Image (tube, rainbow, N blue to C red; front, side):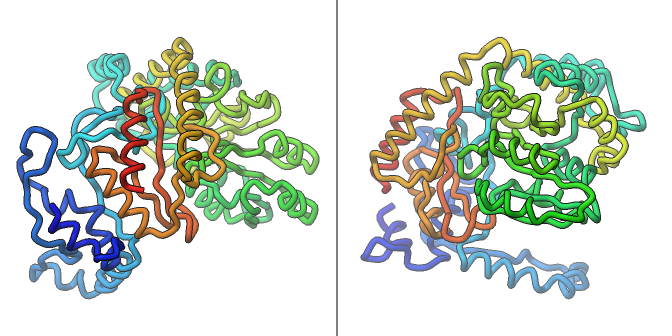
Length: 450
């Protein structure tokens, strides 16, 4: 093992090269894939070298394809040299506070399973019951024959949970955002978007063909100046995350609602990371700030705190009727599998009946943020269960993530374009399933690696 670290780090302790730094992050997959474990959680393989292979072996039948895709190989190499090349790791077993990644058991701070429901047996039981009755797939879009009784049940439970007239279930949170934005605005309209909004909101803005103005992150004075100059438009739409997925900070929702009303703009918020976590009933930050009657369009996801998959939109009945007729990502997608809809409906019941999960999560998150600040880590303006450790460069982030992984702690490195240049970080996702001991091990690993 000493020889491995000598290969990656020079005498000064810094990475010898970007490729070496990248190799650290992928070292487990590269050097152990297919190798047996010793059974005690420690690797028994002896790494001799690190290689980055980007080109598969070609056959004669591939030559024509390669001739028009030759540029991809160079682009992948460029990403590798910048420390931005990504690959996938194999997780085995259910999602949870601990899991196996590439065969190594680790404490998992890399999931959005905020309430610890993804592996809950009650969700699995609900899915099994629906599987027996409905089968695996929906077989068609919701407007043809894909809309089942489980989708209807889920939409009714979502509307009741969110205290709105109606709800619409989509195949993903991405589809919900893209389809909703593009259905509300078009050419001749204006969208005003926070600089740190999720990619799904940004893509919805682009696909709408409306004019788009991006205001600096959470800068309400800048947003108001844009609204003051927004003359001659048919409609105006403000879009924002409520809890920003990489920063962990909260949108100034009361000020946003004030500006939307003052300038007669629609306000769309994405509660993806707040649903189930914030608010007295777990409805999110709109409920937390007491704005449920002032935010007309609320988007959320079933894939994070609710432990399933899919997205949703809640609001008035007329809003949902419009989206059914105009949201292309809804109209032209096969409906989510009925077993997933059944599991999500069960998850809503758990969120309503077990508020201790979100209370415990937010209490532990506050304590962890205080500990990290005392240790000198830059956690930005995090005020939630999402806590970034901002380290600057992609290389620094990937090396630090690898060091933690060696110590049995998984915290993913986040690099551009997910974050702005110079803001690469390790993103800690705390869940209700994490114990005090898990957090203590994270702190110890950071102290040893930092």
